[in-house]
Image (cartoon, rainbow, N blue to C red; front, side, top):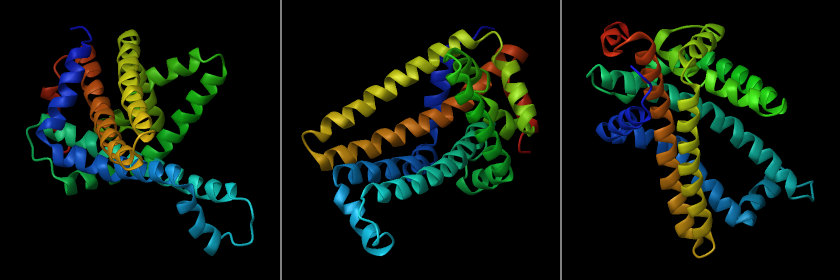
Length: 251
């Protein structure tokens, strides 16, 4: 069996369509609404700056300090919530493939079992990819492709950080070209949708915020479900039909 981009995309959207409340609801809370707020504050900077300046930074005259502190806090909060979101939606995808109920509570419980290792995995892989990007870009892209399914490996196969990275590299071996193409398709689609929200901002700020919430919710849901679908595809290509192995997962 060969890698099929169409099959990955079909699995991604099918799972989301079957459980829109879980996938889109969680993505709305973790990604859509925070992005919408950031869009609002970008278009109305004084509204964000004033409370901080009045209460916590009253002794400073430079507005940029407000954005540094606020931006740093929002980044770390978003980083942690994104990891949790991805883990929960990976669990949801696997439960869907087992024809089990996709319950938010159960998905959260399973995700929390691996939450701290997932944070360590995200930090280590991010540092490695950033270092690779500094070394003439190409090594960073290769590492990104090699470790693209490390998170679902950790969640589904219950491996450690180094074991998950190694297993992800093994699964990606021989399919990096198609994975790169899939990544480009996702990036173009995401950039097009995000650019649309920026364009709307020139005409109507409120509409721009509303569209940003919808777009970022969809992007987050597709990204999380897509990573799980990609893992399934790579494992199927390497080891045969994946559905038979699902009976031992989250049993």
